[in-house]
Image 1: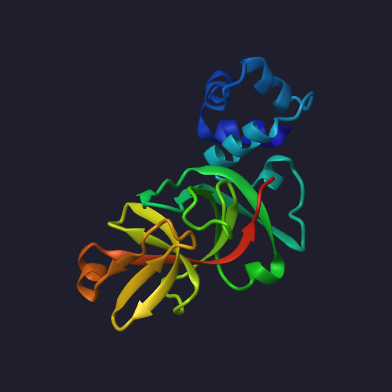
Image 2 (image 1 turned 60 degrees about the horizontal axis):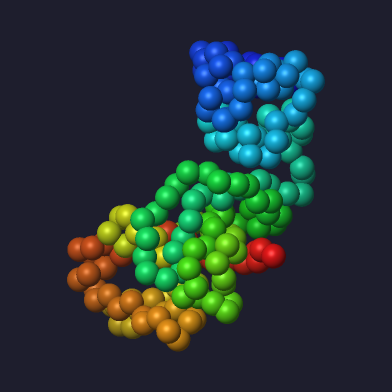
Length: 196
């Protein structure tokens, strides 16, 4: 795959360095570049993240016209807030119709505060936006560090983040806390993809 060779040379790294990044032997990189073998899915994700290109670009395929690949970036806590992680762990396809409505990303769910509707290891598709209607499910950033997924209820100038699981307490923020912490809406959950 000449694409990998070209990208590697542009980065100015050796086959050995790229192999170390992907956790494979240098001969594997050589075989990829010569077209003898193809990278496995895990390696493709790492290569895509490192080079900043789509998996379709790596595989030298034209992008599928009716689907768009979006990154699944780390994990979002369905429970207590957890530090937001932004490294790409996978990719999901969305329709062109959905893509036309804005920028999207995927998040892998950790925890059970949103069960039984949204469960551990599910992927949620999130449209990036900094507003949300009361009653919608959003991804909320707290302290610029902790991301959580909850049903967002607006009460006056404050916010209440409601879990679906009754064993968890709602998170309540005053107007002042929204500004000082801060509490920021980073997106609206528009689709749930359950994993078996």
